[in-house]
Image (cartoon, rainbow, N blue to C red):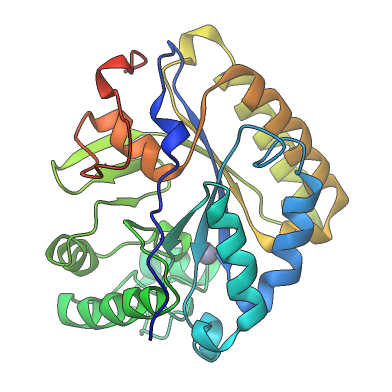
Length: 289
Ligand SMILES: [Zn+2]
């Protein structure tokens, strides 16, 4: 028999009576093979995240990361994720294999899918293929007792066919690199995303400069209405300068902004009901929009 389904939402996150836009901490590429790095990274951020700090974690889970076996077979990983959900974290579906096997169709497509990333699994999918993978992925999360209300495509590359499939399947939202789209009311919220690329020394150096500058801009009073997304990857755990950046950034962010899950950020920013009776969501109290 399947496990009971957890709610993704943090009931405490309903109280957003604040004049500043919220911030969300998002951990990408969560899967059994990245489990150790995920724990290392969250361990380094422990003072700022639940249960010690105010920030819940949005966990972007990949059902079959690069062809791995079903999540239901990974007991330690499941127990860890269950324990995080019990603290108010949420699970979001993040691709299926997280690998791009579709052919490249031209120079622009080549740059987007071979230079920017090689893992844009949902960049070119038509609606039937996206429907198949999304259904399979969601079913495999449900088999573990996890309900995903949102979807983030690998590298945020979401084809039109995927967008159509997400709407048909009743997902609440999906993310792009620069915003969050509430599919129920077709509303996009601009939300700046901080993210590191660590796969080369020059990328790490550039990431440090770029993200420090971006964060300074976001703390400018003129930008207080812009939601902040902190997008971490498990591989960041291997690089002390990346870990140090995230520690400092998160400490500064939780001191300045309300801390929420990504779903909560979408629900509060679009002003639409989240449809969950268990959440005391005084959306009228959200004054940052
Ligand atoms: Zn990813």
